[in-house]
Length: 300
Image 1 (tube, rainbow, N blue to C red):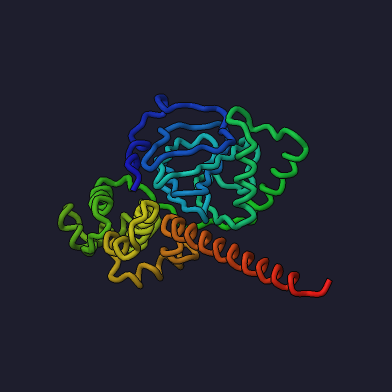
Image 2 (image 1 turned 60 degrees about the horizontal axis):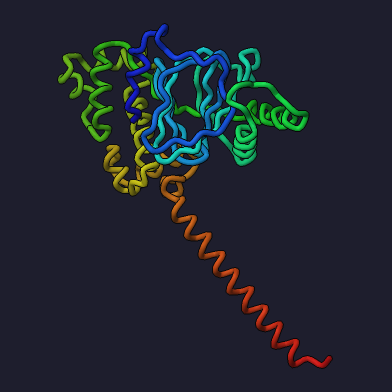
């Protein structure tokens, strides 16, 4: 999980770095690198074309792999952390323009077209302005905004508790997501009944204890996968009863299996592409050789 998950909550607003313009550009972050707590006067989209990015606010944390993007509304104090080597694409939008109609952070599904639009728009952008620029860029931006409106939200928010008893329980599980104790057993450690804690989960976090623990484990799994941890090891470290159970939950949450997750599949895919390329070259060489032999024996 992000090391700075408590940092935003405990940072006084007047001491937070204020960058009025939300930059539109591409930035590269090494594994574990952080962008400290700050806020913009603009809305911002953050998309990791490679690796996994985590965004933390005082309301909780969001972790997004390469099939998801993060929406950060204007004036939201937030911090970023990279898991794996991250290629991070930012798109800034004026506060007056909100294609999603959202005033809270969210995770959005990113299909192939939206992915390419975000990458191209960020690549040709500027960290100092949200201006549209050329007519070509304005058209690119218009299509990007249309695709954003069609992008469904994903329930990948891990809310931060405010109630002290609940915070104590959540901190235990943040430290060890594989802890399989029941809510009653955890309650005995922090001095609260499971009924009290269950009520706090619903009232303070808007979800049940099993739902919150599943979100925590999925977030932790994304971080481990970005660091190329084997799928079976991830399942064990995150507390799933079996690897197959982990794969099933992960597939339902992200639309693909953890084995095909970018952090797991990049090296394997690169090798497969190289093998495919070598095979194509060999086929081409054989075809050229056959053609040469045919030409040599054919009548002129």
